[in-house]
Image (tube, rainbow, N blue to C red; front, side, top):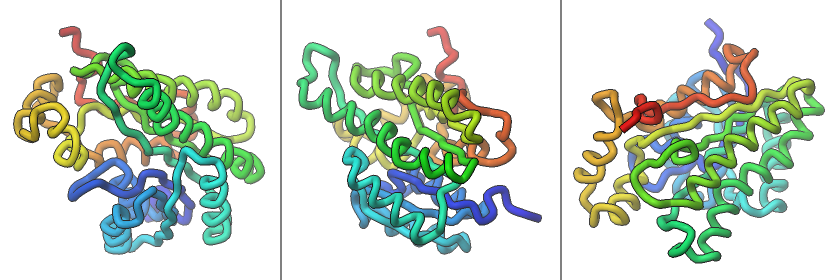
Length: 266
């Protein structure tokens, strides 16, 4: 039986992970490889992709990697060129880079605000700027942008820049999807909720519960109607559907992956 992404070329940004476990980027790279995709994995830290490489190869997939600063146009252009040189085309782009910073508009510095805009939103703009002309020349393509439920609701802490940029990713995707629909390019967004990814252990617990991972997980689980917490594999499965031909008539929309959190009224 043919796999869903057989011989498709996917460019995944943020394909590494800060620690053991299923971060979104790692899970996306591996899941797409399991479905037959050729993976061009990008991260700013090559070491973070070592486990991704191992898991993709273990799944029988083909993978090439490159380091890239996705806030820099020249760096992205170089990666797109390298991907085309290696695989001949780009069928799927997954924009997975992102990260939060604490604070509201008064306490947050302008420097942190600007860095969040660049990291979470400008990066999506720049990758699309360089990949869309290629997809347009091919007459087809699918782009999946990874947002966050922070872009649609309060998620337990003030992180105004992160929330604003992730809301921006959703609207950027909608507008660009309509613009490029006639070119045969679909653009959609996955909106993950509060998942248990390596970021929880490495960074978030230190910021929010003094390093107590269990306490942070309990806080996050208390907001989720389903009795368990998802991880990067749930994001990956949603992205896989939107990237595949099963979603051929879906563009300019969002798939929320949050265990029901965003529809709670309390």
